[in-house]
Length: 91
Image 1 (spheres, rainbow, N blue to C red):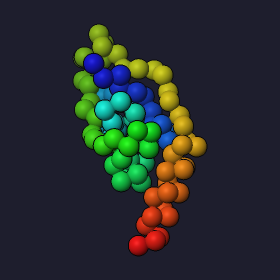
Image 2: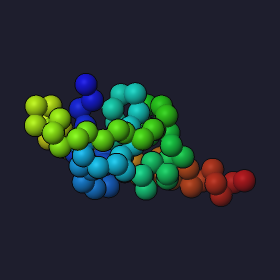
Image 3: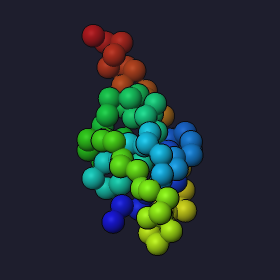
Image 4: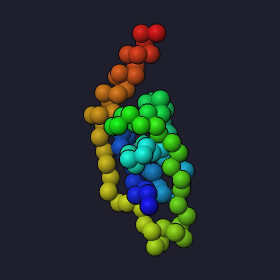
C-alpha cells in the first residue's frame, strides 16, 4: 500500500492524499507537480520516473490513513535544479 506522504520533498507543499497533484517514483519519493516539472519528471533522489500519484478516497483513509511523516530535502532538489538549468542553457 502506498504511504501517501503528506508533502513535497522539495518545497514542502501540502499534498493531501485525497487530492490529485502529487507525483511519485517507484520508491515513493513524493513531489508536487511544479517541482516534478522542474526535474523533467525524473526523481532527483533515484533518477526514476515521476508519475501521478493516485488519490485515496476519504472513506478509505479512515482505515488506511496516509503517512504523517514529512520528508523535506530542499538542498538535494536545488542541486538538481542547478544541473537541469545548466543543461538547458548549454543547448
